[in-house]
Length: 247
Image 1 (spheres, rainbow, N blue to C red):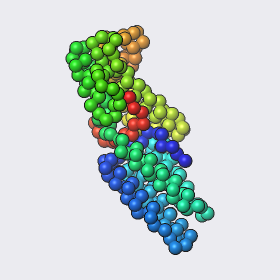
Image 2 (cartoon, rainbow, N blue to C red):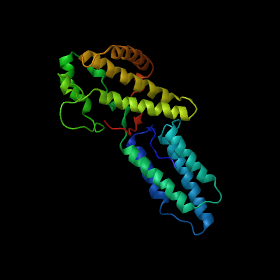
Image 3 (cartoon, one colour):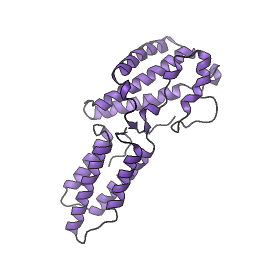
Image 4 (cartoon, rainbow, N blue to C red):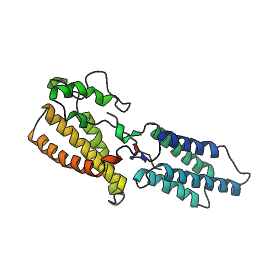
């Protein structure tokens, strides 16, 4: 059974998606047929409606939701099946998805170092705290990301590492699918690479931990940023994204 650790992207407002999932749970989990044939017919309707919600509410080219669809469709086609056990597995899947969707945020609201790179080093320090005004940042109280002295740096790398983890996960998912990249996956690849580029440029601008390697990474980052802003920037708010990683 899929453990739902992959990246999930919703195509609808998360309150709408949550309502659709809750509707499935309420509609079918208390309904039972008087005999096995009626139970099987109800169960097949359950599977059909579940797959329809997945297609309506999620980017179905991505590995995680694809696995969910395949699992439910496999149950739907089986003639001899333990219906109660299969219903429980689908219900468990829906509960996990519901939890995941509850934590989703619009892509446009993900933390970004973009706004730092146009500031002076001193202004960057003053503005850095704005990056953490989001529920997805789970860190202690204090100066975040940047500070005036090297000993006070709590790490702009927290943001950078977040995108690195998501980038590596997405690359792994694409590999598992046979290296076929959908539009949304390309969008996310470019997004994650661009955000890593913003982080590297911000580190260089702040004068913290500058090395030749970082300068080279910043130059690569500029190319990723240019590609992203030319090709995808207008779609930055079109989806909401699950984030299994925390800072």
